[in-house]
Length: 436
Ligand SMILES: [Zn+2]
Image (cartoon, rainbow, N blue to C red; front, top):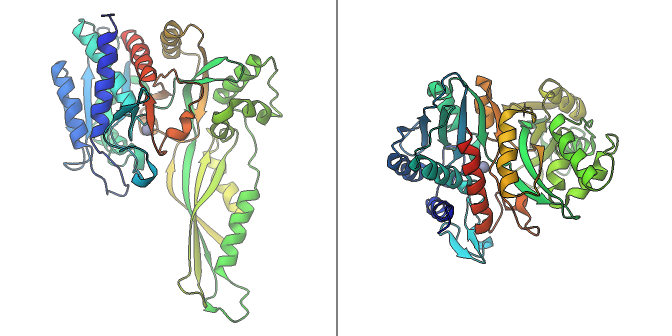
């Protein structure tokens, strides 16, 4: 048996077991709860003699928190974090059951296979192997498996950071999801994207008021017309392009890989070379605002007095002040704009010791790896930890098959993970954690 066989078997087992706990998060306090998955993680930590606590606002919405003491107290701590919840499934759109973790075509199928029971399994399987071999980290590790990531973290990362700040004391970096995966360019160059930045979010409610009345009569103050105009103006608005360091790093390397020079004035030319990743990366060139919900009216012959639209706004690091002003200017003063949920944008340096450790681990497992930074268009629990000054990185390493549209699997139907990718991830994660 090779000396990684146990690690490779264990990561598959953990990933399957975790998928089988249906931890669907429906949002707004409606959720199946993470408790069963949290207890499962707790049992593994018990086996490893790691003290842990299961914490949460109630008996169902649970996170796991633990500390692994480092041997060098002069070094800052580091957070390793995952989340235990998953987004809902539309059963009828899946070709396999979503919570049985069936293995077919050398892949594990199920909700959470990429987001992110795979990552939890990698961390746990790596720690199992390391700790059973007598390893101790130099840096103190805060090991956190959050609840409620998929609904903004009110019952998870925000709850835990507010009520248990001692678990984040002295930590300078947090390592979590959505980074470290491979993306093979059409010319065969294999990039690995480490998440060093993420956009901020502003979930906005736009309201237009008008004069209610009979649908048969002239009405120049129709709330639906006003909200429609606002949405049309927003969709045709061009937010200014700003190339942040994390995005420049990715685009420069992509250009070099194609024998080109990256032109800041025409970033889309390089973005287009990124295939299935283009829709994500292009969203990190500027702020964005996508309308997602509309409400107005109740009867076909009644003009309503009010119409609302919800808009998912995402802004670049540095644009938190200007973003809402720009939205208000675009939709005009007749439309009220309320940011119902606001969260920060993050950017951490790519040139850092911890990224070097990621690069080393990836390069040993895949000598052809070309490691680059990137900015996530969405957000993760790293946002909640940023209030402690902790820098967030996304590193759930995966060597993926070239033909897999990885980003579409996040929250998508038939979510699945190739077993070889998961095992590559465990080996790489094991090397990375060993270095901490
Ligand atoms: Zn996730």
